[in-house]
Length: 61
Image (cartoon, rainbow, N blue to C red):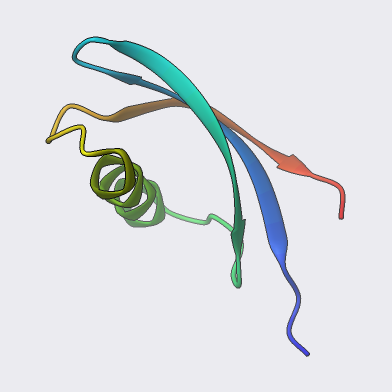
């Protein structure tokens, strides 16, 4: 079983903001990881290309 990394993510989009918790197989290590999460949030909630992560916090498992 691989490790899981759980994060609380705060984001902004064109009409407001929101937050989610996500679980990843690998830790966030690069801007590319963040951009991928922005795209996943955008796709999940149908927010277009306007999602920008404001902050993220790794949660204890």
